[in-house]
Length: 430
Image (cartoon, rainbow, N blue to C red):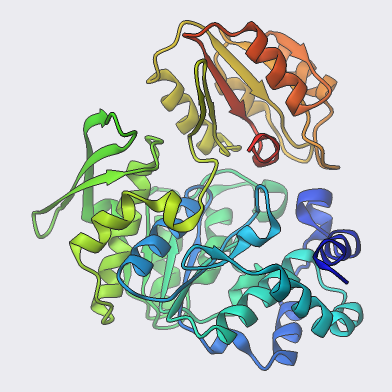
């Protein structure tokens, strides 16, 4: 098989969460463990940081990767989903795995895949772990796919566990209350492995404290350790100008971050606390490394889709935020952006309760409803009908591109077009 045939094999043969939803998820770690056993346990051959959370885990993973590689460490990065290219999921120092390596892995493991019948995600995790082991990375940043306890990535024993925050998402899988969801995320906490929790929440703090105590794991709340302030808004070079203050040491760190969503102020705290834990374990990471890395996260790691400007006239911005917590942050960013009229290109998936999200969207905007080109897409007429209950006015369009084309035709030079509602909507635009 060539590369394109290999991808078609992966997509057509293996259950994919992005396509099928919850039915694609295996309820235990058996398949991943079995695949990695046949690969001679690659997950035990490299050091790792494990990152979970409802929102922010992708940004935090990319920032940590950028810092580590700037500090001179050969750094693997595993994330999901991809936006344009399957190979985005598996990188070393920002470089995607080669097409040849993808083809060779599937060629070598095809018989095992057909015998074990793993999911798409389970295969990609095994591929990533084998690649990082074979390339002898110094450390890898591993982003959880969904939840934590039963996520395929949870076969590793990392140097550090990181949980960014807890919010309502995938409630049909992870639980309907914040403590239930937190309990699933807390499943990545391992015996005697330190853990950083990004944000405190009165409903979930005890879940993490108890889990950490049970595992003799030192726990840090990043929001207790750091204060991060926006100094001058966006600079002309399109950076967030930040000042981070370590509350206990009263040390100050000036940062220019090339990820410009205001929600990154929370993520920065998590990143800085994680770096402190790595420094305690002997990693040579200086303030200069941190500053240099955070000013070029996108360039160093290939991160896309986080409050990303894709056109200036009219201003077009996309963001992959797709749950209640994420959309609240998106709305804050929209409110802080100058514009004459707001145009919203919105699509969603059908296996989520979207009422809370729709209730957050501004009624004064003009909406261009669409559906991404995946099986899980919410039919556009259903989306438009549900949105109307929240006084969101607009028209349905058969595709994301059609919706954006209509928005561009109607938007004036001083207007704002926002594209989002689902990672898969953003993926089609980027």
